[in-house]
Amino acid sequence: MRSSNKYETIPQKLFIENRKKFVAKMKSQSIAIFHSNEEHPWNGDATHAFKQNSDLFWLTGVDQEETILVLSPDCPVVEYREALFIKRTSDMMVVWNGYKLTMEEATQVSGIANVFWYDEFTIKMHSAINYAQNIYLNLNENDRAVISTPYKDLRFARELKERYPLHEYERAAPILQRLRSIKSGVELDLMQVAVSISEKMIRRVAKFVKPGVWEYEIEAEVIHEYLRNRARGHSFNPIVASGANSCILHYVDNNQQCKDGDLLLLDSGADYANYASDMTRTLPVNGKFTDRQKAVYNAVLRVMKAAKQLLKPGTLLMEYHVQVGELMEKELVDLGLITLTDIKNQNPKWPAYKKYFMHGTSHFLGIDVHDVGMRYEPMQAGMTFSCEPGIYIAEEAIGIRLENEILITENGCADLMAHIPIEADEIEALMRA
Image 1 (tube, helix red, strand yellow):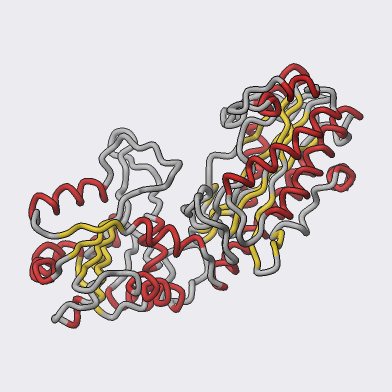
Image 2: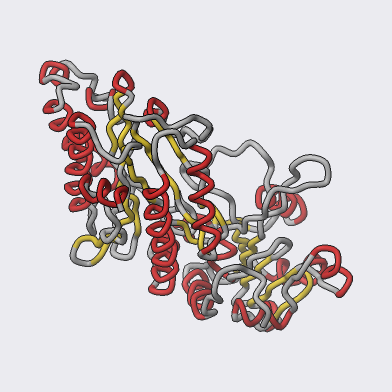
């Protein structure tokens, strides 16, 4: 089979097992329908780079537009119990638009035997939908999503309810959120590849950074290392923030010059096979931390090390964030940034430490950098999280954040980036090499 992707072929057993897990959660007499993302217009006749719907990819491994998955395990028509609809390809399409999967190749990728053309969906699925009592539809229910555009899944849900108003409709998202948050061995292997690319990137960047370079030059080094290691690109817009910019949490302009004495906060991740890495390191631009910078750096690192130990089965994410805040409180007092009086008089809804540590410490991680998961349910073995405390002192132009990826295990946690330099002296040594 010709590969249409940069990354190594993923074993189809991953997607076969994922579908089995989902089907096991469906009610009887049900049909579930999942759509690919669409290509989004840019300007003129250009489109943004295509990125697959995470749920469809998790269920099929198919990484192209105009794809539909149907799961209807009780359907009397055997070939519709598990069916894949893909974009119709031809020799002419290959000439104009490039390579697309054939039916046989779609089967090899997904493990789905019954493959049809995308434009056959409405006619072929009418009887299967009529037979079902319940229809599972999928929407973007990520807690962090704020979406104003009527995306494909949302439009399809409205259209289907108009066409089949007497069916019972079920939400696929809660099932997928619970299933996707527990990573299989194959998924962890893919995430480890993304981690290894991140390691190569930071080792490259550490040798490049010096006074006078521009943030966008560093960004160019980052993407160079990602692409040369078969990553699709960034898993999110990279934060390359020097000096005062390091105190802007989501700074992505990346257009300022790095100066002697500045810190550089680099928050970036590689997208490998649709799985995201997410790592943050803070470097001294001239290769050596000042005493004050190192004191703040080590405070953040101590909080990170302690926070990692709290990531274990049974932990509730929202309670964990409060506990980490209490760890940070002591460090900020020792740094002279807040006082015990500040803490005593604080607003419980916005504790004193929030002046210098405004964000949460961990988020789900996987196919998406802010992956889905049930944040109000206890952590379980197999979940992966970021761990990223930070201190941001705008008046001193010191912004320091450190971030590794953490796997929850039966016995606690494993740091998937523990081998990547993070101690202050390790960072300085890396920059001297």
